[in-house]
Image 1 (cartoon, one colour):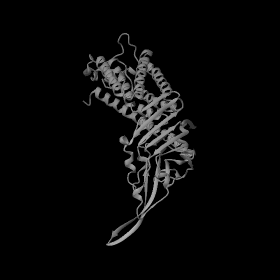
Image 2 (spheres, one colour; image 1 turned 90 degrees about the vertical axis):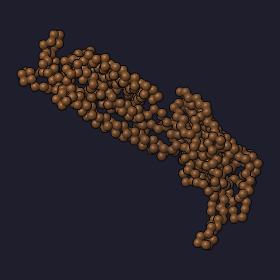
Image 3 (cartoon, helix red, strand yellow; image 1 turned 60 degrees about the vertical axis):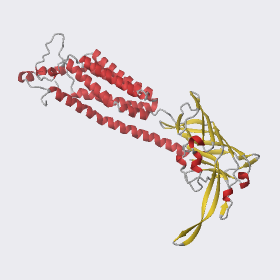
Image 4 (spheres, helix red, strand yellow; image 1 turned 45 degrees about the vertical axis):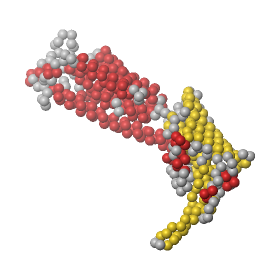
Length: 468
């Protein structure tokens, strides 16, 4: 087996393919590095404005302290424990119109949104009768609105309860992770009959906007000029409309569906603000050219392998020889495609960069192979086949749902083509060293090629050389 021409040729081709994986990994590292630069720009914009906003509220927080006695080593000890009672709204409605503005630093972009949000809540009367007992001191209730980044509050109107207006003050009482504002209330206001609360807030943020549905019945309605929303999170909008002018969406949920009230049932609980489910929309560019380029590079081994195998098949069916250096030069052009794709996509977008990179590299390979393979037609045919592969790859990148179907169809067509072209080929003859040593360039209608010539010395001695 180790004396077989076919074995050493295939082993050499496999080694060349593995060698081309080195620049491929270097390109992947370059993509991750450039993507990190882009993320650092987004972080800088977020640091100078505000980060992704998650809103919790409005809800009423009633602080109280209770004297608790315990027995330790047979002795009674007491201490005063501070707790909070959470009163959630029966109805919560949020409406907003955040407009997105693109901020650019160098070649990188970040999306910043700003707009007014209208909040409405309806609360049922709460007697708090269980707190009116000995040892319990009830503090001042507050209507609380918590946010993940309070720097985004540009303006907030006074809280309106009937004809009463109350100004908001800094601070929320919902754990360390939650920032926000509160409006002080009185126990009489909390224990009165059913009452409504209303207020407006102008909010700034980046990347995404989320609203936690704390009401027994919660609704969120958003309208924006951003045409590329990404609806994520635990709840999808019940209604949505997206076009080139922007989007509108409406969410709705209740306690039967989300069990939100369970998170606030115990007075001593300290819930995780970031883990609460929410209505969420992402306001960032949905198509990440870095991710698309990284996905494209994962198919590099397929492109290089198919190209090298095409050369090998061409050698097997004809008398021409392709030197390993020529394999490497064509492989370098295939790898250069991904570098050009990465560079141009940062300035022109992924689609235009893909067209430029594929045409440039295919044209370069066509010119080179026209000399290597002994004719323009052969070089152009190889380039056209490569362009066809680039077209299929683009379809795979743009359609994740059909990627398996397209990929399996492509492999079937390639396998069928190879089987049809080699169905009459005698592979034992291909593996015979005498096939190469006995070849002459005196065949009719075949002009001897420099890279296909056989030296007089090798003819005289009968020595075998893998590539002539």
